[in-house]
Length: 253
Length: 196
Image (cartoon, rainbow over all chains, first blue to last red; front, side, top):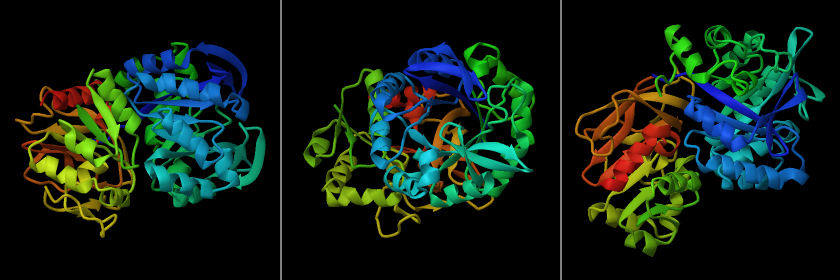
């Protein structure tokens, strides 16, 4: 039986893992390679590394971090942040990523999705959509959540899937770092609109939140950062609770 | 020496990294003569079945077929396993190796496609490749097409239907999942291949 995935996310700034609340107030949470292997040992089904302040200037830092993180990681590894063209993606794959996540660049040029998927396969392309509630719908934001686009998140998810995205990563800006639960309504709306897997993100605070987003939100995977970094919720313990609640998870792993 | 065949498809780095971790001597190569000279062959792959066209245009097909029929241990991963069959509905003009019968097909529309994530593997007794792997262990899949259940099937998973997760016949092994991404379970499978 296919299981629901628990994904540990590492937000990286200048080669270090950081964590903020609602995309602000960053705190240091460690070295990416060390964090990644610790999470994998603890039962994380996948690791996502996001360079949240990506600029062309720190590309080398990022590739170095990708390489060292990939080195002894034997679970799927996704890298995002600052990927604007096919060559950027190629460099990140070459450094050891299994999948890349693109966000702003895909909004500006949806053909980038098909270009990367055409060369590396759809399974390697995750389109991240930063969504925020606005007047009863969900609006897409770009540039690390700083710039509103006026576009509808559900429509954009459909378009991204049609362009060849293999998965949709769906951070809720309203819930990011708040630990008050995933936005199940957002996740469900997108999950029901498309036929590719949806990864819920933003707001994880307890095992209950994961149960809710898998049941009510129909998420295929759920991603969290803060609760795992600071040991609030141990992944192994979380999986045991999900298993007890009859959510199919890779447990024991 | 294990040759990991480079034909421009899939993440060869992660396959190489896993064998490096296990201490095996591996070479990533697209040269037919190096492939022919290797003791064991790994044909990786991810993405579209049409990328297997490169095997024909680069002269890799013949040494691969010869090595397989000469009894050399051969492991196809994901697309590399699909190549062992007759072909795939994903790209009908490319012929597979026809070592196993049948064509790879799409998943039914009742399930999301691609099939992405960790699924349990129902293991048949007697497999060399899956020796020591616990029944219903979880392995990582990412694919849109699946191979048919054949008599050589040694592992099955379920997603909308039951399909071949692993096949094995003498020296020929195939896994639809990614052992290099399946944690300790995957590493133990690759270790078994090294020891065949």
